[in-house]
Image 1 (cartoon, rainbow, N blue to C red):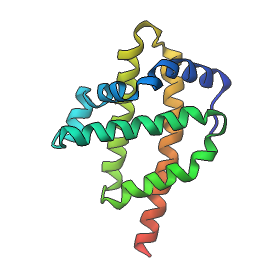
Image 2: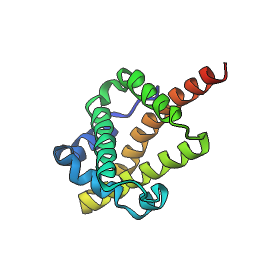
Image 3: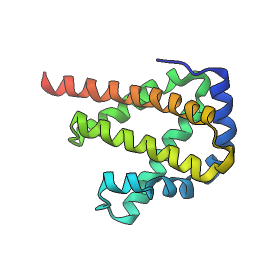
Image 4: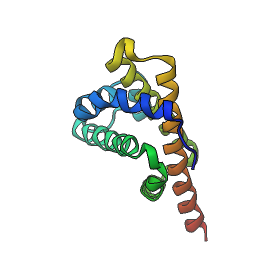
Amino acid sequence: MEKLSEKDKGLIRDSWESLGKNKVPHGIVMFTSKGHQNCLKLHLLPSYRGFISVQVMLVIDAAVSHLDDLHSLEDFLSNLGRKHQAVGSSHNTQTSKMTVVGESLLYMLQSSLGPAYTTPLRQAWLNMYSIVVSAMTRGWAKNGEHKSN
């Protein structure tokens, strides 16, 4: 599993300090971004969208809480990837959804942080998100291997 630089960790922690205390409103901002609406087709019930936004924010919070040891989240993220694969998403669909969630995360950060949202901060979050997605993808791939055997 890749590692984050100390600079990236500091930027992520500092920006998450206030956002992490208000997960629900910030999660809703993520899931009301235009890109996310298009991806999910918004056929989900509003209460279910709220549930998903909280779940995504909890995963982000777990990753931020374990920045010094993201490897400790490997099993959790891998299992999460397996769950996503088990609901029948194709690899292309899953990759597309993860891309949109990442874009929505960046949208939420930019909307919430305003001028504090800098290019280095954006890159730090992208670096962390790519580590999370990689771990989830490994779980997705492992589950697909088990199904084909």
